[in-house]
Image (tube, rainbow, N blue to C red; front, side, top):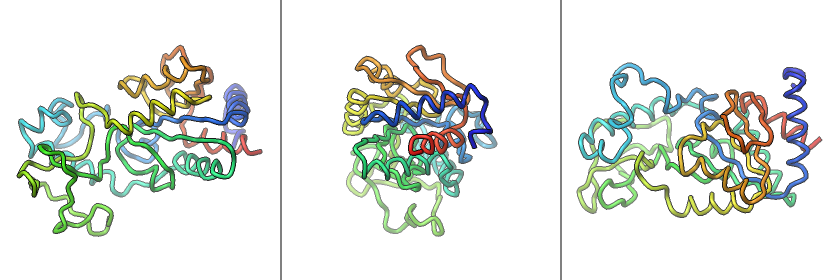
Length: 265
């Protein structure tokens, strides 16, 4: 598979593999690009069909939910329908394999994601979600987790309900919303502390398929660099980030299996 890459990129893959094989603490941050390889549209992709006239401020902010909860809930039910049949790609599987093998070595591989899908979990990874979970709901008022036993569980894809009717909380009668971190909301405290600690203490930080534009997650690479880590970026469209030491300008599904193969050779 290395032969499919340019000589310059092959050299960078070998350099990255040598670096990673020699280090113990690795922190990995994944973004929308890794899920896009499985066919999940990124949030910045142009909306289509019924949603093409709506922007982020209409669909993914607390203010939007207060203003028109039915609109926001309907859009997330639509997103769930788009995502439900998507499967992990080679990049997801490679990361899961890396974590699995790390259990029997002295390497610690901490995986953080900005994505709200569960493709990392489907592949077998242990992952910390910074921006919430598409398949979970909670009350928009009292924030209690919500599970309606009268509706099909989202865990059973063959019997899923994508009903757009609003649901109400059994505790306070507030409207149920997706358990997603919307624009303008704080990240979950425990998850952010996990990410911050991993970035601070890692020897190598790997950014995969992320624009490095959405803060505070985008600041994790800088935090790692400030504490002496080397930074690797895997992205077919590299970001203009001056702190990156090794750039692997190719899709994660191509690079990660090769990287792990080289590390274990």
